[in-house]
Image (tube, rainbow, N blue to C red):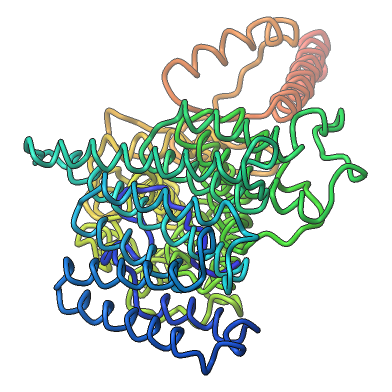
Length: 570
């Protein structure tokens, strides 16, 4: 399939395809179609035929009129060419120029928003296609490309009218045009699917039916018609023989029932399902389908299909805070888009950089051989500077890039969703670096170091770091300072905490341990391990015993001294 045969989108900005700007289509596409006819046997046989030359001349004269905006005259010229070829070939025969002229008339009618007339002509085109044995000089490849060209134009027209009306500036005329475009899209797709249905169609063609249904599913997704999309997905699975009966008990696909073509079809269906569940925010179903897609073996799906699955899988991992898995998945999506030559690779590269920073990874994604060529791309340079600032803990540069929206980083809705978490990650990183050499430091000084954020934000970050065990200390909110614990051997205590000697018995100390810990925990955040406490208890017990023994020895000597007169006289 060609690079632009399928185009997957998941935001209104990207909807449509390369032909959206000009529904009439490009001259390059028409030249490609004409090359399909150039070397067929029928054309070689009719090279010297005067009628064939006349038909060709009429076709190109009509195209010139179309390009000169004389569309009505162009339609008449195309119709004259159709009548000439019909008279020449005889009743029931359809030639090459008839097929091409009908396509051009449909394009003109669509361009003029004459949707009803366009549908009439399109049905004539399908009528010609429904009798392939009566078509002369039209190859199957040219037929397939022609049908898909029509479907792409219908989708482009419908999307244009749909998004114009949803933009809030719809009038009565635009609403009528939207309804007409919607009816046109429904009639065109329904007629095409009915004709090529592999079981019930008048001209069964499973390949063409499958691709048409995929296009229809994509159109439904782009216009948020989720219920119809679910029906389309069920039809694709059932008719293609890829229904749930072919899944093994482990959730994988049974190899014996899957050919290379079936695997390719299954991946394309999964791409639709993943888009659907992503929009519905059905994380459980999304994770299940993504796992199945990753287990499919065989087949050669288009790189864009793989890229789409991997990209939405990466977003799924991001939503679950599985940043390491997201890095891997976004990187695979980037490589697939790059292989397809799709500009979406830059968007995926931004997501890869985002996931790497959220994972607090020391690996710079731009060190990769595949990514390095895009490091200085105008669209990526801001992300390059952002990741450099992140790794160097330059929080002021980091905040400036985000605040000024350099490189339009903040224009991406997905990136905006994670900016607060990204700021939190670098602030914790910088905070650990700043407090490392100190035993006591004021919260105000920390706020200044973190680009003048509030004291409350500093306290929140410190609490998180203390609870995670990354800082051993406590916050004195009255004095507005952080006091880190000083470790001496196996013991640790705050820098200004006195450690008075207690001569309590082991029993009383053990019974009061829980009470003392709970009392201390109520005033400050102080992290100690049970082993350290038990070790302290043993040392206190030993010290207490030693003191008692020393006191007893002194008492014995004193009593002996008092009871011996000779010692007193001396």
